[in-house]
Figure 1 (cartoon, helix red, strand yellow):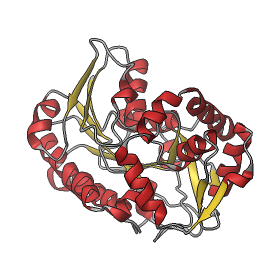
Figure 2 (cartoon, helix red, strand yellow; figure 1 turned 135 degrees about the horizontal axis):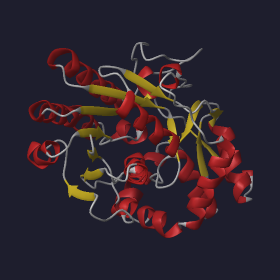
Figure 3 (cartoon, helix red, strand yellow; figure 1 turned 180 degrees about the vertical axis):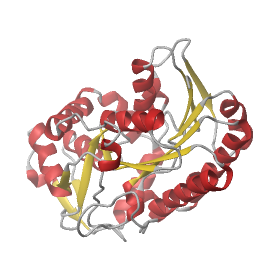
Figure 4 (cartoon, one colour; figure 1 turned 90 degrees about the vertical axis):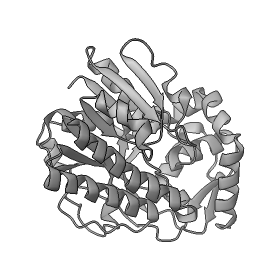
Length: 334
C-alpha cells in the first residue's frame, strides 16, 4: 500500500496529511486530487514536488475526473468535502452534492478497481450536541447542521459499502482541528487574522460553546494509524482531549498577539449551534495512538504562523468570493 490518493489534498487537513505521508514514508507515492474550490489552495502544497508527488485537478462528483487516479492507487484517503458549518446554512446544495454524492462516486470507483483501503475522513459533528460525557463510535448520529448531516450521510454510505460489498472501508471522525494552512473563515485563523489587523472578532452568543481541539499533525498521525492498523469496517474517533470554550480560545489569541479584549464583538448566535462536542478516543488509543502536542503551545505556534505568513492569508481574504460570503453571513449576525 504505497500509492496513496488523497482527495481534497489541497485543503487544510489534506495538505498537511500529504506532507506528513511524504515525510514519514520515503518509499510512498502521493497523488493529490482537488477541485480547487474556495478552500482548495495551490499555495498549501506549493512546497510539495518531486517524483513521489503528483497533482490532478478534479472533482470527486465527476467519475471521469477520478476514475484513473483511483485505478492507479493502492489506497484512497477522502478529505474532499465542503466543511464550513456557516456556509452550509446559507448554501447547503454544494455540501450535499460533494459530501454525499461525491463520496458515492469514490466508493463506486474504489469497488470497481479493488482498492486495498478506503479511508473516509469525517467529523465529530455527526454526533450532534453532547450535553454530558463523550461520544463513542457507537453513539447515534444526530447531526444538527446541513454540513454535519451531509458528513453523516457520507459516513453511512461508506459503512454500507463495507457491509454490502466488502469494500475495505475505514472511517475517522476528528474533533476541531487547528494549525497552519487553515482557511481564514474558521475560528482560530479568522480571529487571529482579524486581530492582526485590529478588526473585530465576531464571537457567537455568549462564547461558551465547547469544542475539543486537536492539532492538525496529531490529526494526521491518527489518520495514519487507522489507515495502516485499523480494522476495516470500523470507525475511529480522533480527538485532542482539549475541551475549551470559544471565549477561552479568543482570549488566548488576543493574549498571544498582545491585543485588547475590546476587539471582541458579540454577534447573534448561528442557527442550530451545538453547545458542546466531546468524543471518546479509547478505541484509537488502543492502536497505540495518542496526541503529542500541548494545546496552548500548539495554539501559540499556530497564531505565530499566521502572523509570519500574512501573504498566504491576505491573498485569500482579498478575494471577492471570501468577501461576498463574509458580508452576507455577518450582516445577519448584527
